[in-house]
Amino acid sequence: MLPKFQQFIQERQYLHNVSPATLEWYKHAFKWLRTESPDQAELKDAVLRMRERGLKATGSNSAIRAINAYLKWTESPLKIQQLKEPHLILPTFSVPDIQKLAAWKPKGFYQVRLHVFVLALIDTGCRNSEAIDLRWVDVDFDNLLMKLQGKGSKERLVPFSFELRRHLFQWRKRNRWDLVFPGRKGQRLGRRNMLRDVKWVCKRLGIVPPARTIHAFRHTFAVNYLRKGGSVFHLQKVLGHSTLEMTRRYANLMTEDLQAVHEKISLLSR
Image (cartoon, rainbow, N blue to C red):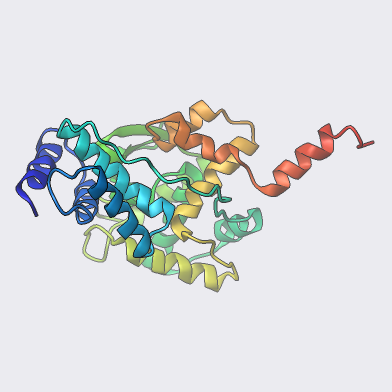
């Protein structure tokens, strides 16, 4: 890696305390740049190569945001315009799917761990990584709150239900480790392991898992939150979004919601 890129990453690591995942994001994005001080033509060429390699608009914009952060750090007047992304309906689990998962009767340590893990995602809307990093010391059983470590090491308190507390309390009796969802020897679980297990239980219960299966729990929580009359501003706090714009995506509800509203407001409806 070129020296200037290394300096930028070191400052982000030691001065801004960004997560290891964010550091890897920067490193991956900088692979598209051929020089430390790219001009407009070189920036345009980088985007063209992204597209030629098959990156979609969403993936390209992820790299573009990292490159723009670097350009700003170098005090360059240049900036790459982000690509227009298609507005797709977010993948979610259906209500019957959630009911099947909630009613599942697991057997053994690992199945119970998986069940409580899924219930935590459903009930709080937390990210997969936030659940994996959750420790018992951060679970307040009395006040029904859990402290999550979000992106950029930002902490936030999110509420959880009496039902989840019941499952967590029972699970706590079987789990002697500091982590709420530990591996066999108390180590941090891998994301791929949990994805594999979630897909396994979906198959077992006859559920067709949506795209981005684990993150779909977060989408499901958010859509349900708004369906039940929750505020977009409160949802932003619960999800840990840095800007309201990120949360507004969930205001574009499922097609059936739009149809139900239209039937009520249509001038032709009786």
